[in-house]
Length: 477
Image (cartoon, rainbow, N blue to C red; front, top):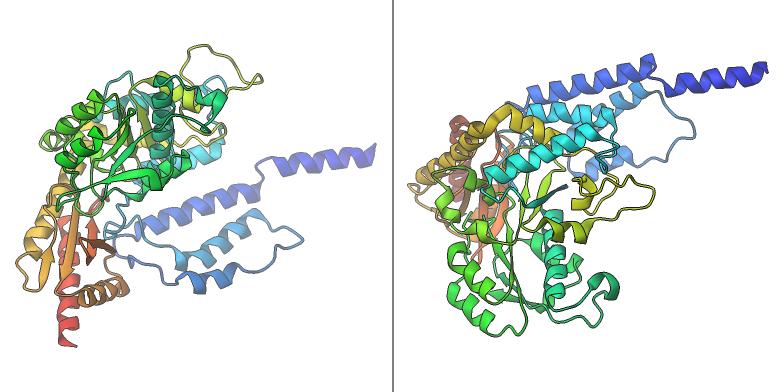
C-alpha cells in the first residue's frame, strides 16, 4: 500500500506545473523578448549556416531525460546562431511578415492553452475568435460575407484546398461524384494558368491529382499579367468547364492579372476562377490601391496568407470559397465520436486537418490591435516605401528597376548577372539588410519585398546604402 501511494504522488507531481517547468516557461518568454528587443540592430542573417549548425544537434537521444529549464537554456544557447532574422524590419526576402509582437504574445497563449481546435463544442472560445478572423478578413478583402473560409498553415495549403474544392465542383457539374468514384475515369478538367504563376498553386494542382503537365500555360506581359487574347484562345479550345488560376501579386513584380476582363470570360464557359492572392489580395483593403484588383471579388475562390502582410506568426493563411457548402463538402471529415452540431460553423469543416492548434488566435490579436485603419495604413506605408526605393535606385547608373512598382515588390538588376549576384552576395554577407535573389525575364535580380510591420524609411535608406556600396566595390574589382 505504501509503495503504491508513493508512486501515485510522484506521478501527480510530474504532471503538475512544478517549479522547474514554470521556470522553463518564464525563461522561454524572457529569451523570446530579449531576441525581439535586438532585431532593430542585430544582423539580418544567421551567424551559422546549415552545415555548421547541424553539428550541434547530431548526437543520439539520451537514455535519461533532462529537466525542463536546462532543455530551454540549451536550445537557446545552441540554436541562436542559426536563427535567421526573418522578423527584422531590415529583412526584405521572400515576402516575409514580421510576426507582430501582439501576435507572438497571443501565440504563447495558444501553445499554453493546448487546444485541439477542430470543434466549437470542445473549444468554443477558439472557434468564436477564428470565426471573427474570417469575418473581419472577408470584409477587409472586399469579399462576400457568406463565403466559406478555413484558417490554414499558409497560402500553399490555401491554394491546394481551393483547387480541391474547384475540382470537386467542376466534376459535380458534369455529373461525376468524386467522393464515390475518385478520379479514375473522371471527365476532363482543362486547367489554365499564367506562365509566371507562383509555385504554390502549381503544387496545389499536384496535390489535387490534376497534374502539372496537363496545365495550359498562358502567355503573360512584361509584368507577369496574363494576356487576355491568350486566355480567350485557350478558352475557345476547352471542351469542358475549365479551372483557371489567376494571380493577385506576382512574386517579382507585384502585378495583378486583369480580373475584370478575365473572370466574365471564364464564367461564360462554365469555369471556376481561383485567385492566388497570397500577399497581393491585401491591397484591396486600401482604398487608393483597390482599383488595381477591380473585379477580383467575382472569382470563385481565393488563397491569402496571414503571415505575410498581416504579419501574423507563421502557420496562418486563409482558404476562401464563395460557396461555403462546396468547401465543407470537400474538406469535412466528421466521425461518429465527434459532436454533431448540425449546421453550426465548425473549424474542421473548412480545412484538411481535424487535429490542429488554434492558429487563428494570433491573427485575431493583430486585427484587434491594428483595427481596419491600422491594417490599411500598414499596407499603404509599405507600398510607399517600395516606390521610394525604386525612385532612389533608378537614378543610379548601372542599376535597373525591372518592374512597374505597383505594390511592395521591387526587382533590381545590375549591368550583368554576374555583377548582380556579386552585389547581392556582398549585401547578404554584410548582414545589415537582407534582400533575396530571384530571376525575372531571363535576368538575375535582387528581389526586395517590403512587408514587415516595423520597416521604416530609415531601413530603406540603409538598404539603398548597402546596395550602392556593394555595387561600387564590385565594379572596382
